[in-house]
Length: 238
Image (tube, rainbow, N blue to C red; front, top):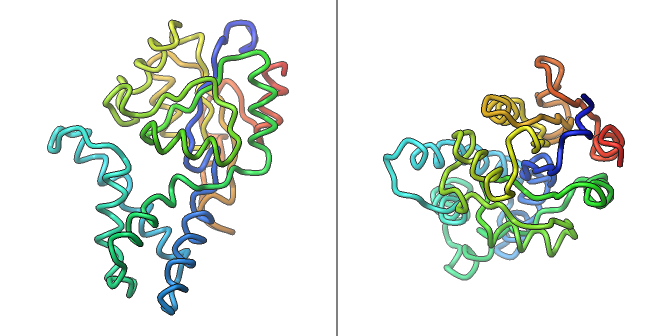
C-alpha cells in the first residue's frame, strides 16, 4: 500500500527539519554582540547553545527534574553560555530577547510551499520538543501553515519518549499507522517507527553548517526518503 493511501496526517520535527536554527540563532547572537561592541563567533555560540539542548531535556525525560518547557531550558542554557563568550554584561531585557531567538527562526526555502501542498490533502502539524508559544510565534513569523500546534507540553514528554509520539496521534483521533513523521533526524524517525508511525526522511545537509555531518536517510527503511519538502509532497501525491 502506498503511504498516501493510509496516511491522514503528517507531523513534523521542527528544529533543523523545518527551520534553519543555526543561521537564525547566529544572526540574533551577532546582533546582540554588536550592540555591545563585542566580537564573537556567532555560529560557535549557536552550536554551543544547541549542544545543551539534549542534556537539558534529558534531565526532564529521566525524571530528575519536573516538567519544564523548552523556553525555560533555553534561557538557562543561554545564561550559562553568555560569560563564556564575553557577553556576561547583557542585562535582563537583552537576555530575555535573545532567549526568544528560537521563536524567530527562518524556514528552509522549500518548507512553506511544501507544507501548503501537503495541507491540501493531509492534516499537518509540528510534532516538536518546542513549547506551544514558541511554535506559534515561529509559525506566525515564518508563515508555516499548520492546522494545529502539537508542542511538547501537550504530552509533557520530550522526544524520543514513546508518549510524545502517541499523544500526538491520540490528539488527532487517529491510529499510529495513519500518521507520518517528517524529520531530518534518524533517531527521531526510529523512535516514531517503533510505536507504529509512518516515516518520511527529509535531507537537511546544511543543518550544522557546510561540510559538517548530517543524517543521510539511507541507513534505515523509511517509508519515504526525500531531498526536500517538495519531493515529500510529490511522493505523498500532493
